[in-house]
Length: 439
Image (cartoon, rainbow, N blue to C red):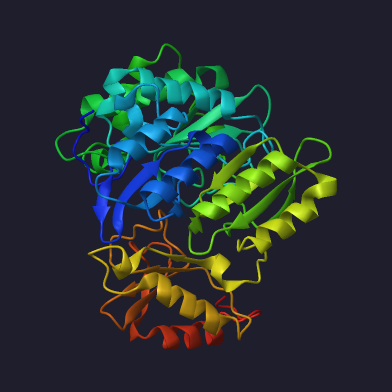
């Protein structure tokens, strides 16, 4: 079928890169059944390079799709149930959950039933298909395993207490102040209302909520929204003063106890966000042998195997390490993000993945474990949020070093105008060593 013009890859729209085509598979809630994992691995091996990328929104990409194999690859993925029932909806299925939804001990409630309703809304209502392929939603249940740094066009977050209420905000994340709240049973109606108001009010070039709100006051948007809803928005002081509790923002690795008795999640990170088709096949084997045959991708470009009996959890963690995944938080690679760089992207000024590997090697000689985003160009494709530190390529040999700073836009404050990757390693070792106030 014909797909609309967009620079974003999708399941039905394979976008060309230097290393071949890119096919992005969007996963509902980041969840993947073992039989689907096998289908992806087989397609990647037969029709592409065998290289898979785990994305920062809990999706998966097949890289290196060979010319002439696109339609066969797409058909195989659709046969495995990896696309929407309505193919016109593939672009707009952008809803992020905690990878531990329904399992996390800290969760206030299970977000998955509402998520299913929201995804059905996006898929089954043709007017929603006009949303940009980048327009994204987040549904947060208060989990301890949650990405709170990624901005979303609409975010929803569980409020503590009874009865159950759902706070929401626009062009931000659950870490921001909420605009209002609704009872949980009105969550789907709220989402439908917000998206309908956006599509009604957005002008040419306003594909994202932040673009609309640059010309329309937030209060005006909320008034338009209230006029569409058959119930009042809650906007009292309790909602205005509520703040979502912070959680660690590092990639989860290791064993994580579930709310279900005697079960654990086993989490690992992929090396610079990539795994091979063979690794995915091995993960499917582990999920079937020890768990419930499911895998979950995380927005830290990692994955976890849920519902593993506690007695088997250590063995599964060891198996993930033997597969080449990262299971130890002391490993520097687990804290580095890098785009495909000049090896896979025409816009890349440097081979950022090779430089990230070199940086990790330098950091292993120190106690510094900084969270660093290595970006080969200003587009920042590999990170949806501003990392604590960013190395932005200025040419083939040098980077600019930025530090995330409150009130400073973009990558943050410029610390060093030009440095090699070796000099960056020395700088982090000196400034981010354990116990250093700059870490």
